[in-house]
Image (cartoon, rainbow, N blue to C red):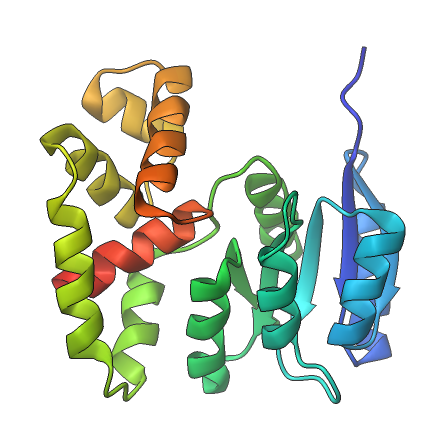
Length: 219
């Protein structure tokens, strides 16, 4: 029996962006575009109506922006995964969205095949996040709370076992479950189980937040 397609929603205030993304994504046999919205309020409403697995979410929109919508959605049980759409001049918004639980981000000029890959990766519970880009984002944002976050992050990581810290570091480097399994000599299901326990222990809801915690600790 074939797996059901990934249910996807697109939220962007530019109708041409929505149309282009929908045309691209509808051509993929394993992705079903179930809804489109023009702002964050519509993102919340269409989630209630259509239960998407993944939302492609613009950040800068009138009314309720993508950041607020991401925070509201990711605070829910059985929340959809969120991939934020952005340009680098919105770095501070991107970081806030990732800390709120977004599964990754894409620049609006990302090649079509990479957009498809990102949707599949995030739908599978992994992160579409490059550590180099994360570092660039963090370095570009003037954040007076960075020192406090560094201390808190180091304290939280210090509570982990040695193996858990190894796993957190690997997630922070952007490694996939398969790459972590090979490096730490585990099976992929074992890695998935460890990541789930790590999320519970750190009170986080996805691996992007683990990566940001590791980045905070090393900043």
